[in-house]
Picture 1 (spheres, rainbow, N blue to C red):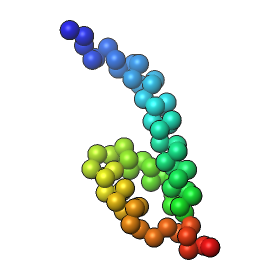
Picture 2: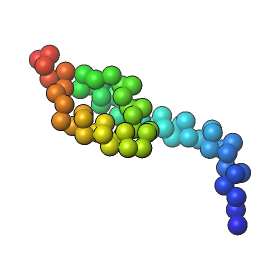
Picture 3: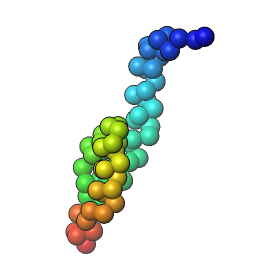
Picture 4: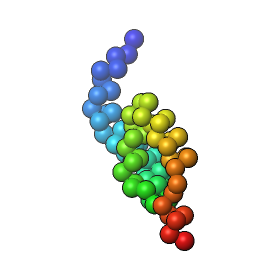
Amino acid sequence: MTSFASWGPLALMVLPIFYGLFLYPYARILRRTGHSGWWVLALLIPGVNLAAIWIFAFAEWPALNRK
């Protein structure tokens, strides 16, 4: 059976690229709605990510108030 411990160095190199590729578009969407793109980091925390999605879905978007 293969040990997952051997994936450590490879995971440290691949995961930041993976996270960047998938979180960058969400950060752009948040900025377009008028929120800080840094809120995308909440998606990495289990439980907090679900709450953040619900908060942003039903909160007023500052970008809509500027028009």
